[in-house]
Image 1 (spheres, rainbow, N blue to C red):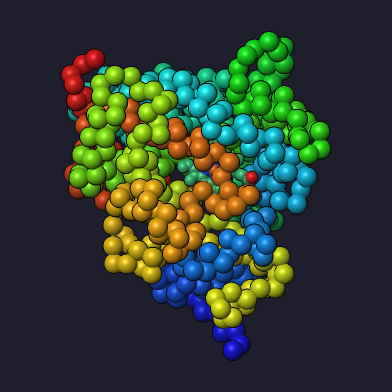
Image 2: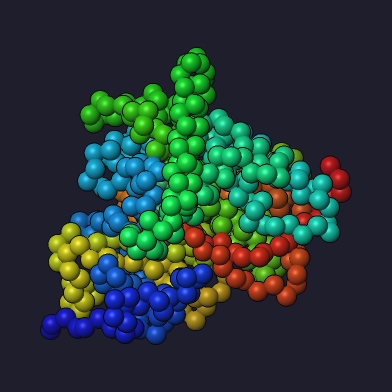
Length: 464
Ligand code: HEM
């Protein structure tokens, strides 16, 4: 049979559906429409039509890299003002992407990540110490403290740079510049191009922020080059020393700067959001908190947390994976057909070059995969055996780290960092909501995290 028309909300002239979207929480609008229009719908936006896909079956088809590739436009293009064709923002066909991908893949592999355990542990311990000092009656601003953790960790592990965020109330200038850069990239993406001339001072600050980011990164590189004997095996040394096995090329200083800043951007909000949502879920589902804590007690006891424990905490790992199923901190990824395509068993026509959103926040709750309990926080379903079984019947049902060759290069890094932090915190503290009536709200920028989420932490074993 022929293809069927793809439904969607009717739009306004010129603006299409853009003004119908809740700009504070676009994901909620987009997911609501998915509920209304089904597994695929069309959105009209000023730069053309796009399609939003929210079933496991269709997403599985869109994960076929012989037919679809990462869509290289929208928000990414603004980020290129600061990080050019770094590994996240480059088109897959750009030789700079392949070069960086080949040099960096081993640097993000299990051995390298394992070697970063001491640095990760040091930063997580600083957080535990801070919460111990707070005492049980202080409201902890969860997302802020986890962002300090993830930023300090990625800066230390990628370039041996210390932000020491816990020791200062004011943020380090590099961090302020990075937030400014991200925020304004988002604003520039939202507003029509010609309007940028009305935002002269914002634009000036934007490029000053970018200059500060790049200057700082260059200084770090120069310092390392002057001290070549340093035995540090961080991401910076991997990039300075790495030779591409395919072309024999090395990364230029400019490419290294692009990628260092990229890691700081890609590698902090996502993991901070993950930890924040995970603690929210544990507190809201006390039986899971009890289980996770029991696992730490039996595997680690009261002694020091070690690298070898990381692979022996399957329940905690499942808690994090289940959190990413229900609250993927990157809610959507975009692909485009390399030639005209029809998906859904002959049903839906997708023109070459069109913009297709894989709406993870909705697809991860597909009732065909998870039945009635799709919205329930159940870490058991993400334990290895159960996960493999679901994935056999419903491939690609869980995609929080993206897909294929353009999937997250920092996945092992993020998981080790998150397992470590969660295990250490559960070993030492009991947790509860600051406001027992808190209901989850969302704060969206490039990523999603809980909004206004405060909790309290009390030491389990007395002052240590
Ligand atoms: C790519 C998610 C942590 C570095 C991606 C993508 C997703 C993702 C969905 C694909 C984006 C797309 O298709 O446009 C996450 C989540 C994280 C996390 C949920 C934490 C829970 C990290 C960390 C780092 C990192 C810690 C760095 C240390 C990157 C990079 C890419 C990427 C460089 C681009 C890879 C490429 O295009 O070749 N991530 N990420 N991520 N991520 Fe992560």
